[in-house]
Image 1 (cartoon, rainbow, N blue to C red):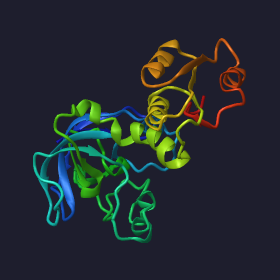
Image 2: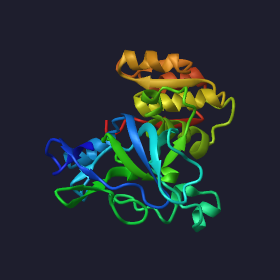
Image 3: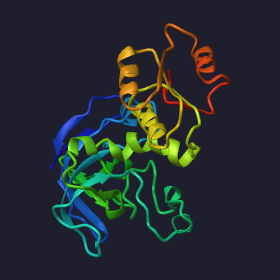
Length: 261
């Protein structure tokens, strides 16, 4: 199968033909339809994050179709449309059992390995690592079954590809981390991929007002289309003063989604 491979941090990625082992027990083989491009992959590629194992196939958000399943897989079958998640879970460790699967003790973050501690890709007889457990910059990928979430086949896969990281990061920040109640005010600094999904999360819980702050008018227009009630161009006015004017006191919840800006 073909994949975009990072052989050295700071060097361009190369499209290569890789050997791909089939799914083992509890794993599925997915034919990729689309992948998002996450900023974390840029950090890995340009060397901003040190210690990334190479060679590695990047990509931590994507969607595709299940081609085959390994032994013991019961919830998925060939033909299923799936979103890939970089957070596999075992369902049995302490944190999975108490309802905090994001802290699963069996996950191996940052090591480029599947939960069993091995890889399924190789180049020239040597292992190639899986970024984010899912390695979505590939034509096919093998993932743990918990990393493949079945979706309605009517949903376009190129849209679904974004759900696994940017959508869940933004919406999850509102629903799960901040637990914003209905009627609370929100300010969202930065309306890129994550910030726009924070806005959508606010709309889902009926927050009000939802104030989008950015320096790019086009992004603010997108924010208004996705549920923001107010838009503040920080290049033209003081956002803190604008937020106080709109809310009368300041935002109840503030979300910062501007990266290193």
